[in-house]
Each structure stands twice: as C-alpha cells, then as structure tokens.
Length: 504
Image: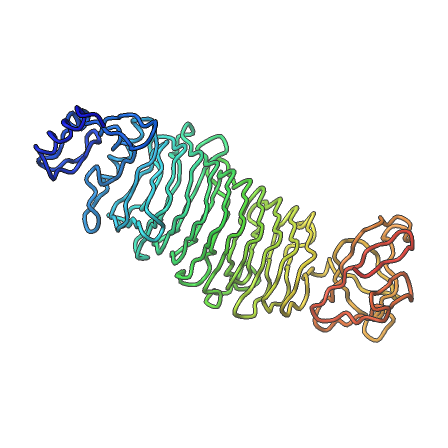
C-alpha cells in the first residue's frame, strides 16, 4: 500500500476508530459508520506479487450478506432484510446473498439470477416469520430463472398450512421457473409439504431444470417432495425423503402427480440417484376401499410421469415401496440397482395399476413380503413390463403376482416360452408337477433366439415344481433335479447350438 493510501486509511479510522463497514447501497449503517463515499476513497491491496489496489467498497461488495441490510436473527422478523438483499444483488446483475450461521425468521421470495447461500445445512436455519405463508417461495408476478438456495435449513414446527419450499409459477402462461437449484438443504417439519413444485401446462406456466443435490426433507405433515403437473427435467442426486408425521401414513415420502389444470399435465424426464425414500407409518395406513381394501403407505407414489429413472435408490418402512396409480398413464419407468427393506411384513415392494414400459432390474430385497411386484388391472395395463435379476435376501413368497392372466400351468411336463417371466402353476398329482421342456410359443424350439433368457417362479407358496435335468431340453447346473418352491426364482438361457435351456 502506498503512503498516500495508508494516510487516507488512518485518517478515516481517526474519524471512526471502531466503525463497522456497511458499503452496500441502501444498506443499514450504524451511527458513526463510514459512508459509501468515504469507503470508496479508502484503497485496499492484497499482499503479494501482482496485487492491485481496489477501493474498500469494491472489496466489501464481493460478498453481500442479509446482515448488510439489517437482518438480526431470531426473534426479529427479517423478511424485509432478506428481500432487500436479494433485490440489491439482482440489480447488480445477479450473484449470491450470504446468510451467516444462526436462526433467522423470514418468509423469503426468491428472485432471478440470485442464490441464497448459508453457512451449512445445520448451521444456517430459516423459519417462517408468518406461519400461514411458505418459508421459501417463488415470485407471484414474474418468472424465476437461475435461482435457488444452498447450504441451509428450512425448518418448521409441523403447524400451519404452508410448505417449506413452494415453487409454483404464477398463472399467466408467460411466466415460468427455469434452472432452480436446491443444494445441501435440510427441509424439516412443515405443516404441508417439505418441497412442493407444480407446473400447470406444458406451454407455460411450467417448471423445468430443477436440480436437487444432497437434500433431506423429513418430518413434514405431507410429502417430503411433491412434483405435480408440468415439471420437466428434474435431477435429484443424494437425499432422503420421508413423511413420518402424516397422521395415517397415506402420503408418500415423495409423489409424482397429475395436474388437471389447463387440460392436464404431468412430470417428465425425472432422474433420481442415491435417494432414500421412506414412509415411517405404514402400519397406521387405513385400508383403501378403492384399492381392494389394501393398505396404502408407499415411500414413492407415482400418479403420473413420462420418463422416470431411479438408480441406486433405497426404500424403507413402506407398503409398498413404490405405488403406481391408475389415474393417468404412467410410462417409461426404469428402476435399476435399488433396494427395499422394511420392519414389518408387507404385501408387495412394487404395486402397480398401470405401468406401460416399466423396467425393474437388479433390486436387492431385504423385506419379508408376499411378492416383489404386484400387478393390478389386467395385462393390458402393463405392456412392456420387465422385472428380473433381483437378489431376494429375505422371504419373497412370489417374485411377481401376475393374476389369472399371467400364470402358466405346467401341462404334460412342458410350457411355452411366451414371456421373460413366468409364474408356474402345477396340476397337483399329475404330470404337470414336473417340468421337462420349454418350447417356443409359436412352433417348436426353432424360433428361439440364442442367449434368450427366461425366469421361472412358483405361482404361490403351495406351488412345488420339479425341474428335470436332461429329461427334455433343460440342463441344470448341478446336473440333477431341482425343486422350485417358495421364493426361489430360476433363470435359464437358451443355447441355440445345443438346442437347450441352461441354468444361468
């Protein structure tokens, strides 16, 4: 620092030796603080080769804090301070508003091009100043783009009728929400949803490019996460969603739902990886007369979606883990490498009424349940459904409950290879108790494809099928008869050169 700059700084401190700097335009400044003009005259330079001098005001403006605009923390209502800080940063072209560690009472409305950044998801906490309003919400009179919040908590006390984070674009179709970030955020204990996102039409107002990373939403009275209607391109990586304080367990940890507004719409292109879903009160769910009197306490409920991918997710304390409803088309669902475990025996891991183009691969099931996949509504509602290559580490009575239209009765020791997964029924005391041959459903074995797989499972606990080795066209690994019973599946691969099914 030059001698001139040093003298300027000393002169400024001689006027106000203990002054705090509040350089933000329009910000609160205590009596005796340096004015913006004075701080603009004071120069600053980092120590080190190549450093250049800057004004003190320019240096201070690198980090805008809600404290600069009068935020004081609990129990003061800091809503105006948050709003002023957000507006200021947007007026300067956008950036970040810092919220220091502590508890702040405010109802925050996000603005475009500004991210609210705390000191940590368990260090900075925002609670509602007005419990009748959402803690954090999108604007009601303009679009919201390139905005969000990170490194903080959004907490409630499970009272009131408001969400923790509410992202619903205004009704005018010219307004939309695009590229919204929620990162390292803990949403806890709200009277309604933890996070509620809703778009009402694909031509606007809609929400797209919603990015959630390391987000926990729990102990809310309704879903931890609700995506409803026109919400497109959602990416959720690492998190935990549950609803343990729902009175009867009927709300899921997360729900993807249909919106009837403006002709109807549904979420699309949703990817969730390494997310844990739970419903801690499945035992309190009341039987639903519209669902054959069955309990309904899912961890993930899908009312409508076009394109959902679940990778490495886990499902706990739910019956079922995933529920796919029949209110509207649910298509293109892929769930790979997921796991399911519960504390009580449940009816099914996945229960579906309509699941066009649904694929469930490589699940690890730790739960005791009647079946992994329960299909309702008939085969016509389940086109393109694949469920295979699972690791059943607990008692799963049947791999899939296919209903009367799905099972195959072993007749004269043979069955047709008509689909990838077959639930076998036996004609007790007859030749149908033994399976020797699996033939092509059309004309013999000549049309089977080399490498084609088929998985056999017992239809129910009473079904016992003896799979014969070499008696027909089946070769078993131990070269001896195998008894198919209980929850054990058997996967066979067609080896065209030998014209045999070989145990995988």
